Image: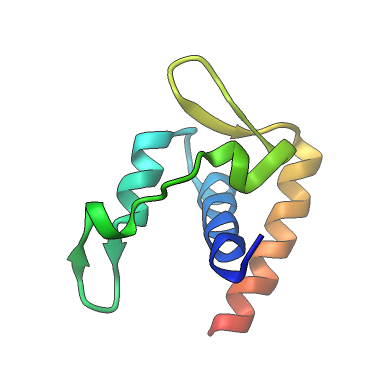
Length: 91
């Protein structure tokens, strides 16, 4: 996994962890398309070309209907602590 894929995986795991409800894959793709620095949206250039399982592996599962969730509450705690570290590093 290269740095870009690692960053994409962390971004996905962060959204899944902090979301008030389960997210669908198309919602995650839409969020990936947003560039907060330029305040632009680029669906063709910024959407992921790989599937969520390829990026996040066994930490997530795809439920019927396309909902992406963490596999277990212990994974949520692990991901949450890693995401807080990541957010602290980029700020």
